[in-house]
Amino acid sequence: MSLTIGTSGQQMQLLFDSKTISSTKATHQVTLTIDDNPPFTYQILNNGSVLSIPLILVIENELRPAKILRAAVDGQLYEFRLPNAAYAIDSVSWCAGMPDHAARQAQSLLTIPDAGDWKLVDKASGAKGCIVRVQGTEVDTSIVLNNVGQVVLTRIMQLGWRM
Image (cartoon, rainbow, N blue to C red; front, top):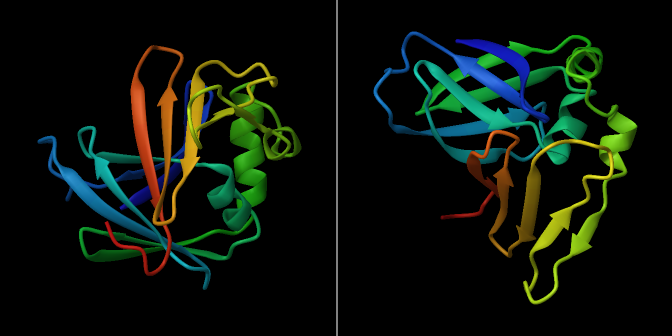
């Protein structure tokens, strides 16, 4: 299993690639544990041998100073050492022409009229695409419309949460 930090449009991604992932489309359970912090659990649809997880700010903020990232993919545990993760993230961001960490951190959530608790992620930084988020009691959900018109649904679960 290899780990790459990359981008899809203006969204940074953690890309996990392995020959053990079937090229047949299927949903995979991925649990990320960064150092000794509570894990994040995803249900991810593969693209060939690659599993792609959006590098949202809450995960980026834990990764920047991290030493170890553990990824359990369908029950198989992989461990990645992360020397200089902040530098790697900043380099990918710079190379893709994206805002720096401070600008991404400063993004605000805008209220959407008549949309309940859904918030629009402020794209004042010039990033293409659109993101809406809702924070739930059990699952935080984001819907991304990327710069090529693809819709990406992301659910973030915390330790002890159940789907």
